Image (cartoon, rainbow, N blue to C red; front, side, top):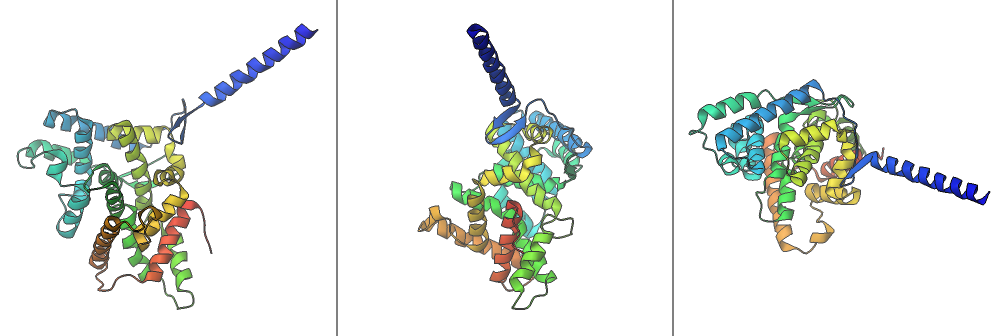
Length: 340
């Protein structure tokens, strides 16, 4: 009888262990991102075409440069895709600021535009076909050149230090969009002194990431989120753009895109601190008293004011209460809060 009970206990333990192993193996953990093993999400037609087109561009760049260096190929690929609206084919202030923060075309690629004209024209023809992508689960539509521009800014080191690079990256991703979005809010909201903050905050919460034609529409909002998430895969795995895109969308990481995005900042508290530092000049705790950081933020503030005045045509800087309300609306939207 004892042997029977003992054998039954051993069997139960073995079965339970096997079950736990199976449950554990059903998920692969990639730096806090849960990727179900064996589950492949069907790519949308737009995303599939984009990935296939990017593979062709990568192959063309490999032939033209006679190099298989992943970093060079990624830099050149992203420079071509963003160039129509965010790079060397734009003019004036747009061109200056993108060259400053994302890198000059020649510096990024080592390619001469005149010496490689035929090959470059072929690649530009392919790159200009890339417009919008989406996924089959959430119906989110993403401005793909905007997304790649964000990725290129993050991928390319143009600053002297890590913290300087980080905040300059924000300038041409979510931070720049939020700064220009201030114009939309100030023009759309009629407020009195009593309800000014609430009016700004409510409008921003309703409009950021929506299908409205604002400076922070759905297409741009998700371009910033997926851009950071995908380029983080590229940097971590040393993968090509096409490979990282396919991994992100086929493995379903986009379903938890907001959580992954927040984690890339270091979690909710770090995310809020970074956003408030960039938008409102509240120096992160780690950099209080750091003269280099404070000087960098002062310089960045100059860029932000210049951009606001250029985009809005106004002489004055934005209202501080407007900046506070829009900043908190963005933070709360991503963290799932709403105070009104």
